[in-house]
Amino acid sequence: MRRLLAIAATILTLSTPAILTPAQAATRTVTALKQFGEPQFQPGFTHFPHVNPDAPKGGSVGLAESQPGTYDSLNTLILRGVRPRTLGLISDTLMVGSGWELDAAYAHMAESVEVPDDYGWAVFTLRQGAHWHDGTPITSADVVFTWDAIQAHGAPFIKSFLDRTAKVEALDDRRFKITLTGTGEIKPIIDFATTFSPQPKHWWMSNGRDISKTTLEPVLGSGPYRIRTVDPGRSITYERVADWWAKDLPTARGFYNFDIVKDDFYRDDDVMFEAFKAGAYDFRGEYRAQRWTTGYDFPAMKDGRVRKLEVPSELPLGAQGFRLNTRRDKFADPRVREALALLFDFDWIQKNILYGQYKRTLSNFPNSDFGAKGPPGPAELALLEPFKAQLSERLLTQPFTLPTTDGSGNNRAQVREATRLFKEAGWEVRNGKLTNGKTGEAMAIEFLDGTGALTRVIQPYVESLRRVGIDASLRLVDTAQYQARLDEFDFDSIIVNLAFFTPPGTELRGYFGSAAAGLKGSANYSGIHDPVADALIEKALTAKDLDSVQAATRALDRVLLWGFYMVPQWHNPESWVAHKAWLAHPTVWPKYDQDYRSTNFPAAWWVDPAGKAAQP
Image (cartoon, rainbow, N blue to C red; front, side):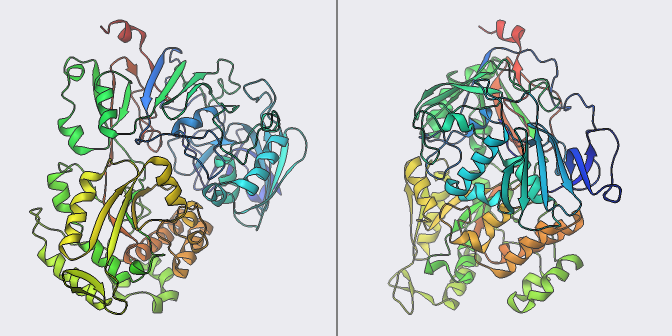
C-alpha cells in the first residue's frame, strides 16, 4: 500500500539527462521534481534500492486492518463512509515519491510535466499505454471528471491538498492543464501530482452509479491490484493485475509481488491479535508496548514460524495526543488546556503501561527537523517578532517542555499547578466538583474512542481528572458513529495522530488553519483559529529553501505547543512488525517510506517459495 507524498518542489530533472535552469528556457518539460538540490535518482534509473527487482511473483498474503473497526464504502473521494486503508492498492497517482528523499517525486502515470518560470500553471502528459483495469485508456477527460467531482463532493481533507488549483482543463486525450490561483510557487503543482488519483469517468457515468454516494460495488481502478471480493465490514480481497500498465516502470519494478492480498477487519484489538497467533493472517504491525514486550511468546514464534522485526525509522512521525475541542467553551481558555496537560502523568504511563518503550512527544513534528527544539533561534524569532504582542513571553524565550515525575503516581506538584491555573481561568472546586465561578457549570470531559485499543491509557487519565473534581468519562462507540461524530466535531476530546508529509505542506492548513476550523469533516479537530498560526503556515508553504521551511514550521510548532491544543502522548522511532517466516523482504529499508512505518509492506515484500514449502 502506497501513501501519497505531498511534496513541494522545483524543477530539476528533464526527460533527457541534462539539467535545465530557469535562465535557459521560459518553460521546462521534466520527469522528476525536487525542492532542494538534485533528485537522487537520475533519468535511466531502473528501480529503487529498497526493492528486489527480481522478486518472484505469486502467492497470497493476509493482513488485518491496522485499527479495529469495519468499512462501509469503497468511494475514496467523498466525506461520508469508512473506507479500507488498503484501497490505495487499486489506484495510481501522476507522480510518486522515492522513499529516500523528503522532497522528490518521479513521473508515473504522467510521463512528464511542463511548467513555466512563474509556476502559474502546469501541463501534464499522461503516459502512453496507461489504462484502467478494463483496458480503457486513461485520458484527460478522466482527470477533469475527477477534479469536478472533488470540487462538488470531495472530502475537505482532499480539497485542502488541491486548494491552490483554480482550474483543470483537457487539451487533448493525453494532455491536461492545471491553472493555479497564483504564481511563484511550485508546491501546488507537486501537491496535485502526488495526491490526485484520477477516477474512471466511463465507469462512474454508467449503470446509474453516483460518485457523490457511498458504494460497496468494487470500483474500477488503474493500480497494481483490482478488487476481487468484498465481504462488507469483514474483509476485502485484492488480486494482482498481471498486465498492469506500469509494471515495467522504474517506479514500479520489484513492487507488488503477491498475487492475492486479503485485508481482514476485526472489531476488537485483542481478538485481532489472537487471530494472528492462530495463523488467521500473515503480517501484523504492532503498536502496543506491553504486547510487543510480553505477548509474542506463542508457539509459532517459539518454533520460528513467525518472526519479529524492529526497524529504526527516520520517517518524520505524526503527533499523537488528546486533542481538545476548543469550539466548546470549557476549553476556550489556554490555561484550562495547560492544566489538563499537567494532569497527564506520562512517566507513570511509561513505567506501568508502555514498558519504557516510547519517547514523550513534545512537538507537532516528532522524529524530524521541522519541530521546535530548545529556545527559539534567530530565524524563528524573526518570524515571531511581528506577533510579539500576541504571544507569551515564555514562548519567545523558553523551550517547550512538560514536567516529569518519578513514575510513582505521586504528581502533587503538577496537581497544585493545575489547580492554580484552573482558578486563574475562573474554575474552582465546589462540593468536590470543578465548577465555573460565573456560570456554575461543572467541568465534564468525555473522551471519545472508536476502537478501545487505548483504553488502558485513557482510563488512568480519566481517574487523574476525577481526583481534581472533573467529571471525566470514556465513551466507546462503533467505527461509523465515531467517524460521524468526528466529522461533526461532536466530541470533547479524542486521541488523534496527525501525520504530516515532508516537508510539511498544505496539510498544515487542514490540521491547524483557521479556515478548516469551521469546515465540517476537516482535520482541524481542535478548532484552532489563530491568525499567528495562519501566518506561519503560509510562511512554511511559500519558503524557497529548506532552512526557511524549518524556521517557519518550528515557529508554528511553538505557537501550537504553547497554545496547549493537545495533551501530548508519545511516539516510537521504530517500526514493530511480526510476520510469517515465509514472507521475504529486501535487506535495505527506505528511509522515509510510510507503508507500515518504513517496512514497505506489502509493496516490496514477496513469498519465499522454499520457506513456505518448509512450513508444516
